[in-house]
Image (cartoon, rainbow, N blue to C red; front, side, top):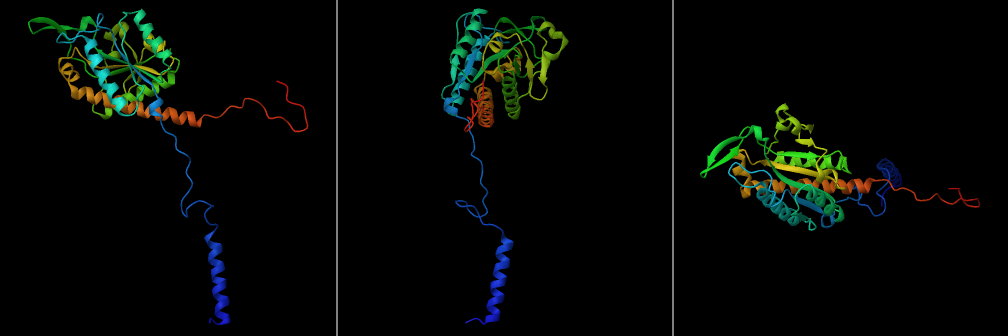
Length: 290
């Protein structure tokens, strides 16, 4: 048995230690673990991306340095990008192909995307240069046209789009994802020699340009961008763009940007304040006139 003096001293020491330790963990929490807020995440299965295949079979767009229509490049990349997005869980991804020529075909693309209630619209294209900048060479016994001075992707957004901020945000995410995979953007749209095709560079870090008049961007009601994946009149870049490896690289960049954008949209929706639809009724008093 402990002596009375020692027992009092031990009791006093225990009380001091308890006071210094502060309050214990709340009921249901582990000691030393702080409560964390519920995390929000992208609902990939419900997020619809429209991949618009630029141009048509009959109106194929630019012709590459080796005589291949742009439409063929667009269809191959869009098809690979869709497969990558579906594999990442974006099951509602749609490949949009039309046969109507412009201008009616351009409006049809926007109308179809709007009718789908899409969350994001990406027009897939491949680049060229104005005719006055093209040179002629012989390929496979034919005169073909090329320009090796410019290479790289370009991303366009329209300030006429219903969600200008969202379009710019996705464009920046896409540019960052392409650059993270070693690709750069072309600066030639800022040059005076582009004349009426000259565009304002909105983001010099990620290669996002402003192009307000593009029908598929300004008539869509969801965030929308147009991607020029690279220059098919540049003889070196054309070969790269035609390769499965380059398509896989760009498809991975598109998927990564969509993932980041979807997550950002989910956070924004979660953080948006809830608006009251009516004022509370006062106890024992008249209702507020409205």
